Length: 305
Image (cartoon, rainbow, N blue to C red):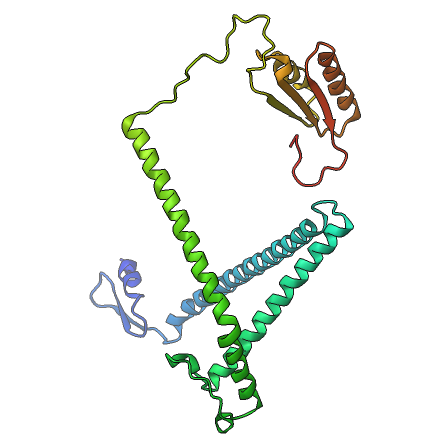
């Protein structure tokens, strides 16, 4: 009878690398002893390690590509935002020469103030690193003796402190006290309003009208007791609803002489402009106080969109 190998034992023992493996057969007179080489058990590991390193490289490349794309997107958004701000500052309104000069002067003043603030901040940082901590003294002792002056920069810093203490600090103190008074006045006003609202809610006070101001039985009345009402209809290429919108507003139950209707048209299509203008003309011939307005320059917010 041919010998039969027990391969299950062989596979179970292959995990032990570098140890002898004994394969037994049914015939007890035969046995095979196989010793694995130390390098043989590590060959699959080298292959798997190479595969894992390749995968890690691809993952790192994908993450780097994603990070570069994110940085590029942020730079593009920031640049477009700066462009939008510049266009808003330059072309928001068609300014006159006087208004434009005044705005440029204000913008120049803001830039000068920012530059001066940054310069003073750098001045204070250098003084702090040199150990001139005069603000830690509660009496704010400013050296006036020439023997205490260390250098020209120290002299400039002492002069700056004297200028702040003598000419800048008093107006700022006065302004801060004035702001505190304004804050207290506003707080008291808000408190009184809150107490008034609470009292109205607690007493359930309702507004009452002594007499009916709008009487429908006065047919011959001029309607002067009715308040003047302004109705604005924004339009922008509204071909489907322009007629219905204008008709609905012109038929409101309100005295015609106490109501003004403005059709604000921002349409780009000339045919739609003619249709809306014709509809307005039709209702104005029926003694309805309706007018048509179309803007040629439409910078900023528009009426129709």
